Image (cartoon, rainbow, N blue to C red):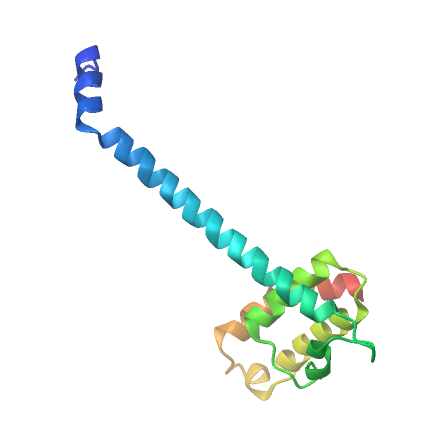
Length: 133
């Protein structure tokens, strides 16, 4: 049917447009809150990693040896750090060690690794490592 002035009046009277707008705005607000929370988490992580105590490196680097399994979230956080601080040589080394550990694991070499390992080696991390090298 044709949309007339009467159609507009009836629609406005039922309130569905307002409810639809409110729902869309609530979803956008929730999305912004999640993005802000993730940004705050990354900022805390980066601040902790880059903190320089008297012995030279933050606590995170002390625990980040070659055998440390960062996992997908850890690599994602490390990539966020490297995007903001591309000059952080320790972070570059840690990323290379994490990827080398995944690629050299027996399960990955035998094709038995889980999807997370494959995603880890196929993600931005390998592109960043190529830039570093």
